[in-house]
Image (cartoon, rainbow, N blue to C red; front, side, top):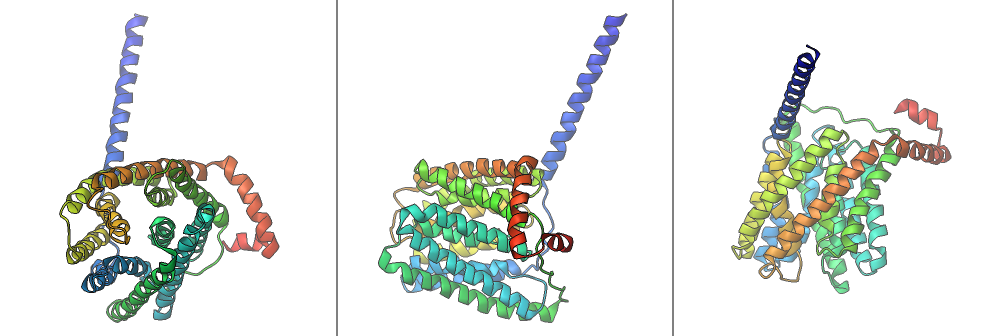
Length: 384
C-alpha cells in the first residue's frame, strides 16, 4: 500500500512542477511580448526624426553625406528634451547634453590619435555620463547617445587634420536640435499643462552604481578591442543598454529584446544595404528608421531594436569618409551580431554584480569616505 501512495505523491509532485513551470513560462512570455502604451506626445517621434535626419538631407544636397551624418549624431540630443518643467529648464537640459555630446565626441577623436588612451578616456566618458544622468534624474535614453558618440569617435577613421571640422559638425547638429527643441517646447507649453521639474539631490549609491556600470561597459569595449572586433563600440553600446536595467527581470528581458531585435535587424540591414542607396535615399532611410524607433521604443524595446540595428550600421558606415559598404555587407552584419552578443553577456554579468552585496558593501564604504571629504554623508543620506 505504501508504494502506490508514494507513486501517487510523486506523480502529483511532477504534475505540480510542470504546472508551475508552465505558468512561469507563460508569465515571462507575456512580459516579454507586452506592448506598452506610449507616455510621450504622439508628435514627438516626428519632431525627433526631422531634427536628426535634416543634417543628413543637407549633407546629401551638398554631396557631403559623411559630414551630414556626423552632424545628425549631434542632433540626437533632441531625444533628451524633457516634458516637464519650465521653458528654461527644458532648454538648459538640452544645452547641457549638447555640451556633453560635443565634449565626449572631441575626447574620443583626440584619444583615437593615441591608442593607449582609448580605454581610459572611454571609461571616464561612461562614468561621467552615468553619474550626471542619474543625478539629474534623466529618463531614457539619458546619456546613451552621448556615450555612443564618444565610443564611435574612438574608432571611426578621421584623419588628424579633420578632427576640428568633425567636432564642428557635431556642434552644428546639436545647435540645430536646440532650435528645434525651443520651438517644440513653446508648442508643448501652449497646448498642454506642464508638470514641475524634479528636484536634484545626491542619492546614496549613485557613485558606486555608476562605477559598476562604467566598469562593465569599459570591460566589454576592452574585450572587443583585445579580440580585434572590427566595430568594438557596438559591444559597449549593447552592454550599456542592458546594464541600465535596475531589476533583474528588466535586465534579462532587455537582453532578449536586444538579441532577438538584432537578429531581425540584421536581415533588415542586409536587405537595405544591398539596394546600393544614393545619398538622398540614405537620408530618407534614416528619417524613416528614426520615425519607427521613436514610435516604438517606449512601447516595445525589441521592435525598436529591429530599426536601431540598421540605423547604427548606416551611421557607422556612411558616416565614415572611407566608403566600404558595398564590399562588406556580410562582414558588417556578422560583426554586429558578435559585438551585440558580447555586450549582452557582459551587461548581464554587470547586472548580477550590481545586485551583489559583497561588491556593494566595499563600494559603499569607499563612497562614504569620498563624500566625507566634500560634506556630511549623513545629511546627504537623509536628504536622499
